[in-house]
Length: 418
Image (tube, rainbow, N blue to C red; front, side):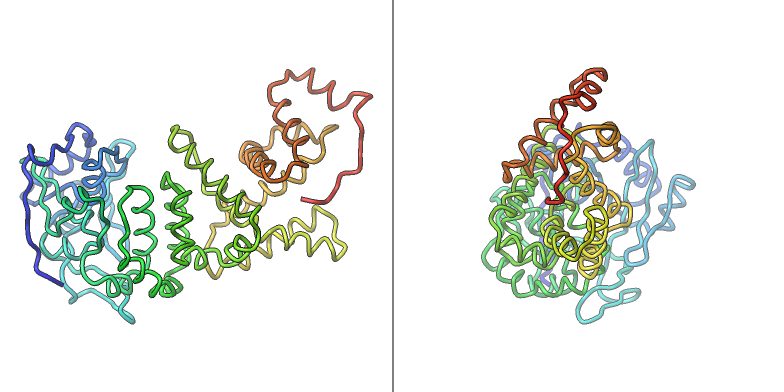
């Protein structure tokens, strides 16, 4: 790796809005400085502030070891991690991550087949900068002097709209394959361009993602889902054959079925819109939308074997989760949420009697209803369900009772089709 070339940007050159930095982050840095340590705001927060965005996380880098950090903050600090030992400092309701400068490849570092398994080698700020993944993340902001220390040309790359790795792409992707997913996320979220060389390196090394723990892959998938521009990220993931690594069955079906691929586009567009409007999102929703592609054929297959709709749904859901497990480790709580969302798609078909009230007050009703709206966009025969469940939410209780128990309500046999 090349030697770092420090460029220092003064306040008038970078115009970073210091008032946007969380007060507690400033306090942590001040207390570390006061104790005799170097400490900087680092990485994503600096990058986002330069791009005019509003960061939520403020990570800090320092020459203090995790134990020394704990000495400064005492009971407000916890040391976490085995792969990367970090300090978490608790201020108010927020946790701030403080990382010690990483050094070269010696000491407590474990590498297997080029991939970093454990990395607790501490070093200097210069070494730390070159150990970071992208140039836009190798930026250190000194709050006391209002200067940015740039060791990898990150400020220039941000201004030119380029996303660049530090070092040789093939080596960096083998060290940590998750960087390929991070590259797509930064490209979509920040509008930084992926060059052809970077794209080709991702395609070449994509299969190394199969060596990453599936729980970590799911965490990265959720970050992609909620990056604010998943619609664009999805196209890039498909272009680089990365979506296939995360969701192989869904990818195959999306290539073969334009309607279901359209459902994914609508789902991603919906979540992007909610994030832009400051509305809440949950990983259950988009995970359920993606896995729906492989759930449908599984459900129909089980139905064809003579199972009733309820049992078929549960059996097909279990099958889908088992098939997905080798690729992404979806937490049990999320699996249960997905199962309930899908179950409500069956219950939406019953629009009379007591079940209407239990459906309407189900904890997953809102997410399941939103999913019904998406399904109705590509399946017109769901229009009557969409209209019923939309109208009923705005009706007084007496009107609901009259509608669902009235003499004119037709109690048709409920179809098992989804």
